[in-house]
Length: 125
Image (tube, rainbow, N blue to C red; front, top):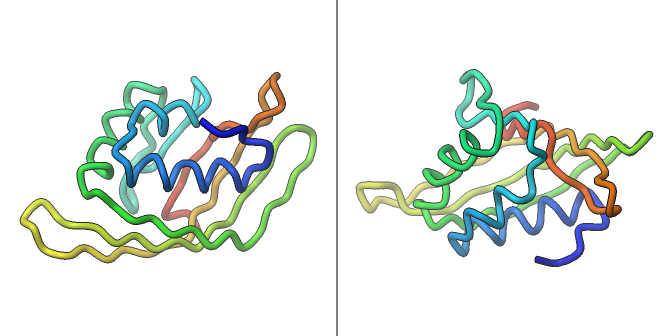
């Protein structure tokens, strides 16, 4: 996995990992106590195992996730990221799938200087 020296690097690596079906690499981008909102209006799931299960559904779409990072604000080892994203994939029935949204994510700087997702809300903004 590349060195994730900026919050934007995490978003880019997440998109690549999902596209390639690398669930373990995608999960490694999250903090152990992270929260993830899998669907609009859904309650968050917490922790790496629940996040892994939620991401498996996304990875099954073989998505091309295209990030468009609009704003990053860092302070005190925490960052917020607003990302207008599009997702192209194939639904379970074989039909084309087109999704878009603006995520509101919170990241935390790790001891090694890399960044990890603490709150991932793809539907947040």
